[in-house]
Image (cartoon, rainbow over all chains, first blue to last red):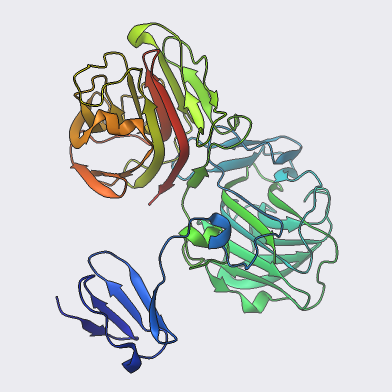
Length: 260
Length: 221
């Protein structure tokens, strides 16, 4: 197979092919070996393998020095990890789901304002204006219900139910859009219409703004430059049942938080 | 290459991650809220995190004969798909001594394996697994398991190879199952595939079989 020049400064060939002379190529050109899957990127006059695995999770992260507070949880196994505290108001459960991609299942009963949440039991290790939280979740709150909502992100209070400052991705029944709950009882709409599909959210706080992305797309309409949190934060995932005969549920597949 | 988060090591933020987990088997004890240590006959006496370099976790038992079977799994929380998932085990089987390297001394009482399966304790049903059988003249086998039976394809690796840590990647697709050992494709099977969701599992059989592991990772594809 001959070297093939593709669009977007991409080149393909075999591992046995001589990679092209870098002098004629712009920085950022990518050469893909179709027989090995290896990719090389041209920078500063040389080719560097770019998808080579690192031998360290810490070094694989985008830090010069992996020293900031950091955690992640894949929510897999027979029970919820003991790092989490479960708070139930009314009646509800937090159990591992026996289903493909089920993760942790938070569930309420159908009592009015019953909630089930997981948090770090008031251990708040994340900076209000310099942290990131990532969550993968799937709510079951049914649009037709009244005040059923799921929240995933960071809270400053002892629990979500107790209220207080927060940075949360909220899927709320009856609302047109998925929302960014950026402070106690304060929300901003994203551009993503209400749905109950599995979603990945990333919420980032800095000293100048708070932002939310959904499935990798920054929701600029929800970016906040005022009402920034000022108190330290803990991770939280919560499901709330307002009124109605059905229960409310939230599957949580992944959570990660770190100080930047 | 570096990443902005642990999430982005395996998924770009534009991709919604499916179920995934990583276990390094490091620390003072097995994470008991994640793993269920059980046995199907015999006991699991001696199973523990191992105080040794690269000791990881060792699965052991002291029951008699083939009835001794220790098991490690997720207490039937079957989060992984029988039509699209993968698992990596880094594991080894400590053979009874003196073990023969040339196959002249048959090892008659050692067996272990690792992979994913359906409901315990039937670790021989509904899954994919590596099986390291009982005799020194045997080879490492890659097996698929459906709702009624298990069938194997022999790899070209003699059983003694499994006495050292190897990286076993087993992938379950919709109509096939694939086995890589230390990055090399060893077998593709298209029959006897699982019909149910799966959980990670590790097993040992016979009292002299000690199965060690230092890493397990599984994810839905």
